[in-house]
Length: 120
Length: 111
Image (tube, rainbow over all chains, first blue to last red; front, side, top):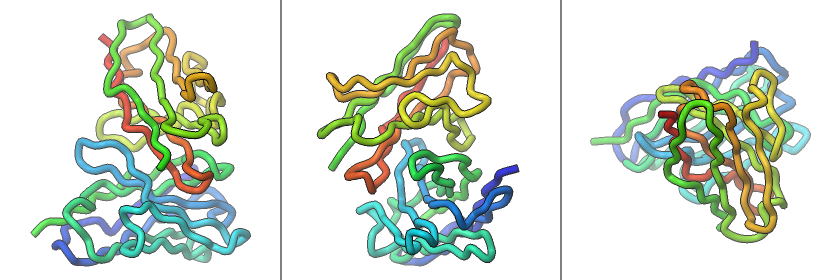
């Protein structure tokens, strides 16, 4: 079964840092681009960023709202994706989903999400 | 920046057909594929349409997608509506073929 499981969410103060993880199973992780998408409470989906695969030099892209503060990385040997979040703001409060990109176009599957709350 | 605009909400009766639009702000929506995701309350999104009009296995053929270049929009059509179709629906495409863009989402009520 193809599966993604996020972890690492929690409560953090403004200005703080947090690292999210996404464990993949049931597919060849190293072949795929992987993305992070977030959803603030009661709001829509917002793309956070992407890491490409080894064949594409593990290059990354970020939404303007997080560029310079968030870093996406991956460890293909551990079938894991990471999101390092620094200088967190209250507006970063959201459920964070990891997702596999298929044919570089569409997301399937999505993880169950992990909640990050930025509050003092 | 490229944006996708969806109606905030739509409603229709069981057994009827509903269409949800997704309009691109600039350029040609046909330049990049459009996907549609269904999200039920408390759950992660799932794909109902990918690459404009393709259905993943397990998605019923009541769901269909199309592109209209003349209006620079994509559409998701759901026929034979069922109460289980009640959910939020998001379109998704790309800006400059690099940056992922989501529409604001449409709440479908089946009443």
